[in-house]
Amino acid sequence: MVTVAERKRQSNVVGGRPARRVVKLSASEDAALSLAAVEQGVTVPRLLKESALAVSAGETATDRRRVLTALNVLTGQLARVGNNLNQIARGLNTDGELHGDVRGSLDELRGVLRDVDEVIETLALDRGAP
Image (cartoon, rainbow, N blue to C red; front, side):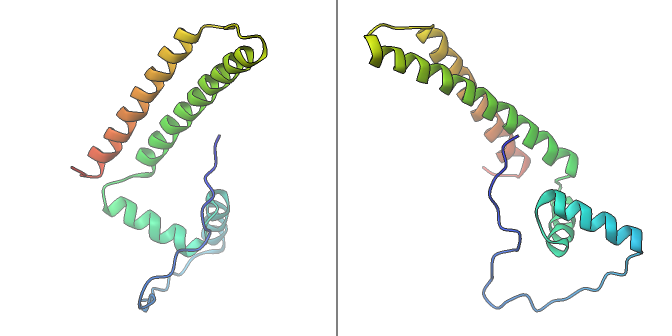
């Protein structure tokens, strides 16, 4: 699984964040939130805010998980194609001969790129982008 380097805290905004909410939790709720925040690599306040705003925007945790799974599959496919192309290039640089299936690797790469385009298009449609 590929992890994206992301800030644990939110970026600063002009004017700060003057609004404040207080949430009362049981010890077990607090522990569960803390664990979820650690697993996602964010602070508890950020987890609460992003979770609440994602649902109100029509995005559920299931939707997000589906998209991340699709992107992880595509990342793996791209890595395999890249590895094939590197092996082919190494063979060309070593003895000037093609080793492996260049056409097949390029066809696979084109297919993966089409899949990437489809996932991106789906993301744009899911979020109401033009």
